[in-house]
Image (spheres, rainbow, N blue to C red):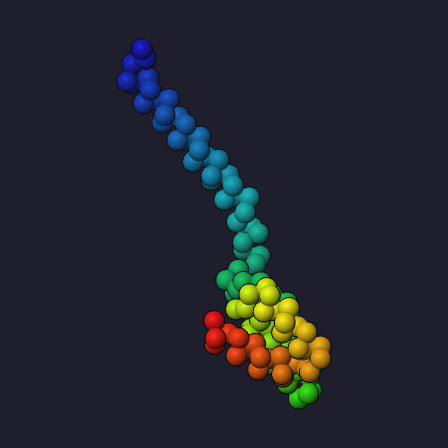
Length: 107
């Protein structure tokens, strides 16, 4: 079994070599950091902004109606959904939403 002093000496050598490697790394990175402005380091890269689509009032109303339709369909059972889909084809989306709301409140 190794003596305690040998173990301590080995561990201290490992620590010293680790500090030497860290100091060398800082030596390599310091010129790069000095060349970069502090503001550029602090600022996070901006995500590309997504352009918002320009919607006409009719398009916006259609999207709202579609969202309402999808929201009412979400809580229905598969058999009820197929019924509502048939109503949408025959009578339109507004009638389908009304019927879906009736079915949802009855359940």
